[in-house]
Length: 475
Image (cartoon, rainbow, N blue to C red):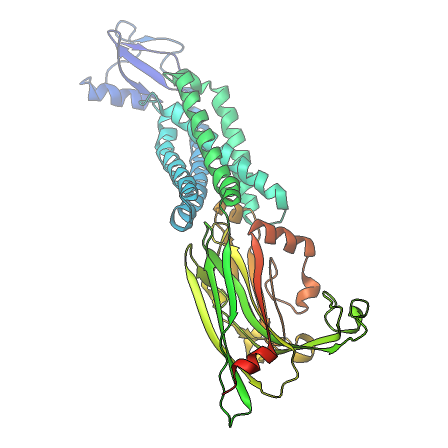
């Protein structure tokens, strides 16, 4: 029987007739190995005719510092479990909630990475134990490299905004852990136990490239190439009246169809019907007198002092609703006008603020309006003399890539609608915990988030002569 010298871990291999029969950390473990082989418990292990000791006699057992080995195991297992939780959180969110296939693919890759971490946990015990599995060292190295790559990516994304979030502590801790673990594995030359180190390195590289390509495609390329187009219509119909009525009824038809390649959320929408009047400029100087009216963005040569007022205003489909690819929403209204009206023209406008669903997901709470003038609305209340009276829509928005959500403060989408003013909307980290909505907004942040989530506005306008309507409405 030969008891080999202690290895780096203090483990001594036992061979009989050149065949390995076991290994031991201590003299007690050696006797247990021999007992299992049928040797008596009182066997004299110092008898040189039966037992040959190499690298020290029966008193040399370096694993007297076994606490150190067990501490290393505990630290490795703790880091891997933390990494497992991180990958599972990212992967499950993308797999179950992402809109596009590439984003779901990224989620599946992160779940697979988490599964690898789960497999690596017992490999840690084996590698710093008796090393019965040859690939245990390779598995640990793979798990550590995955953690290093993921935490490096998360820290890189965090640096783009540099917002303090509690998760940042976890990112930094896992990144430092992965660097320490990699140092320990390099110091232990773990690659010596990998049967095909070149193939292993190629597999790790291919996996990293696949993840990078999928992530880049889902975040950058796909949102850029998929078009967003709408077909909006605002049409006046044939008016109706009777001889005894002082009013005419003008039908209006509004419609919006998503003719692009990406479904969208409607953040806020509205239709506005306005009546316009102007003084006739017989001198033909209207082009020079355009500043005298309330509409300084257009002018006519024979019209001056152009003015207007809102006749009707309302919501179209409603904040938080969706418009899928090919889907169309229609709305029909009837506008009432007095026959003796002074309006020269009627103007109907349909406008929608939209957000691409492949960029973000709006929580359901956004769809519920809060009246700003009602004190029971809580944090959404604002005195009417300060904010006017408007409906407030507010809710959490989440990027479709959970890597972004993980590295940012929460973002909220807000919309404001009132029949007396133009609808307003924005995305920011503002969550209504204090008053002074607009004074508290970071303009740079609002512009950046609008671009990130592709928040936009489109509208269509239709105009008709009131005299023409009156002629059509004659009984």
